[in-house]
Amino acid sequence: MSAARAGTPVPVPAGYRVGGWTVERPLGSGAFATVYAARRTEPSPEGASAAELPARAALKFLPTGTHTPRQLWHLRDLAERETALLRRLRSPHLIRLYETLTVDDPDTPGLDGATVLVLEEAERSLHSLLAGGTPPPAGPALLTQVCEGLRQLHTAGWVHGDLKPGNVLLMRDGTARLGDFSTASELDGTHAYSPAFATPDYTPPELLWSEVGARGTRIRPTSDIWAFGVLAHTVLTGAHPLPGGTPNARRDAAVRYARGEEELRLSPELPPAWRDIIGDCLRPTHEERAAHDAASLLRRATRAAAGRAPRFTRLRRSRRAGPWAAGRLATAAGAAALAVTLGLVMLRDAPSAEAAQGYERCPAGHACFFTERDGQGEMCAWYDDETDWQTGIIVCDWGRESAPRSAVNNGYAGDPLDEVRFFDDAGYQRPLGCLRTGERANLPGDTTVRSLKWAPDC
Image (tube, rainbow, N blue to C red; front, side):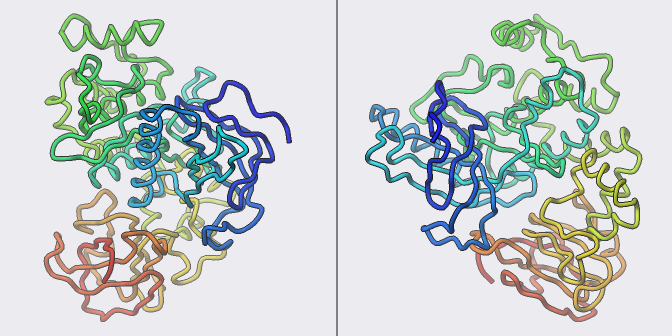
């Protein structure tokens, strides 16, 4: 074994084994946790089969060893927040949780009892991509995916609370995932309660001087909207939208801006559509930002990204037609390049164009409907609830004129919401049927589906 890395919150030596995993190297550290690259060397003793686990993963260690009782309570709270969120939500744009482990190692007090989250391994973070100072060509598409992840969180009643480049993870296929949900909070009425720390550069003005109560800092979804505005400006221009050479200076500028003493200085390089989006995200008060939720921002960001990449709309529609459609639009080499630039439509779990046949075209974690029996014809696929096929974020065009003839539930087995109910109206009032996990079914030709909802059981 090599020595543990010094200066990390949770030093773990290379070669250390936990569950069925062997630690290789550190990937990054936060205030309370350290993440390590790891390889799977045996099935998990907790019961997850080898088929359910990838060959590689990222292990996030949250310590519970040599700390005061108050620190231990805080660390347990962080672990429980992240675990609760990732077990309840599914999305191609939220990092995936495979399993949760507890270290049993009395001979190593600093690790004994630590909680370990086994997460999807990313290629790098958006923070590292921006380190060169030059705005990345894939920036608009990545921002659209970040916004889609926020929409998923907010629709489910959660607030991220610490959106920043370091918490946007980039996968090998070029797609983006939101990560680090240790400060994420579930809404309780109009507010959520987050641990009393955040990243000043991405914190809205009203929270910079807010009081911290017994339950933490009161936050709302509009805090994520502010953070997205700062993130988008940074990604598209390489610069922060408020002046100052240090986080403290920019924090003071944000306070002055909220008081009407400082102006935003949006870059002249921003295209008009993005300038409007970022300006709305960075309104100085919660009330002004509340008019622009994540769903509306996603629609606007998708249009803005289409302006930077003419073929984005065609490929975006092909996601509904199945991964095979991308093969008709570009050569294999061209599709690979587009997957990096327009990662929104290229799902990591989707089968290849050559291998996909019938029901097998349905990406993992999705419910799919087809225009013909036995999974043939055109396809529409959803990983989330869809209140109306006709007016959703991505519309199922053929659903306007023809009814689906077959369907499959390719959701993740064991997910709390892993079964799919579908309805013939926009709003879940008239149920038509339900698909259990893994179930495939041919439907009557007159079954007009208009909405679907993920549920705990049929």
